[in-house]
Length: 113
Image 1 (tube, helix red, strand yellow):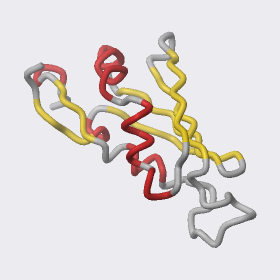
Image 2 (tube, helix red, strand yellow):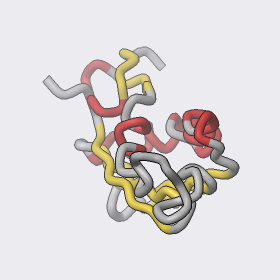
Image 3 (cartoon, rainbow, N blue to C red):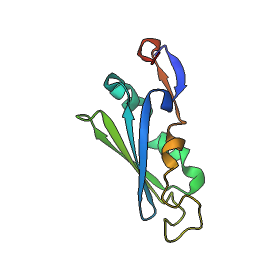
Image 4 (tube, one colour):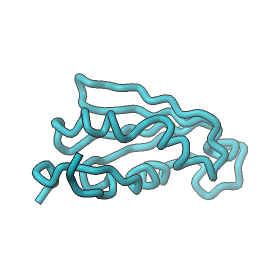
């Protein structure tokens, strides 16, 4: 595909939450037509690799095509979670910003102005 490599935050937004030692990150493209492109490029393997330094052991992506969104559940990424970690971000709220740093290749015509 010809296009431009951009950080994910240029074409999508995200929200994060937690449940125990799991991070839950939603990813929603600003333009719904980008959904198939993000489905190809933002894979479970890439997201797991992005969080490997935090001890993540598994990433499961749930596709939500009617909402043009994805939900990523990342196991063992919160260093024990809210009650079990001295981590300053025990809830994993900054995990969405880390995900949005991932780069994707987008056709120039689909980039926001």
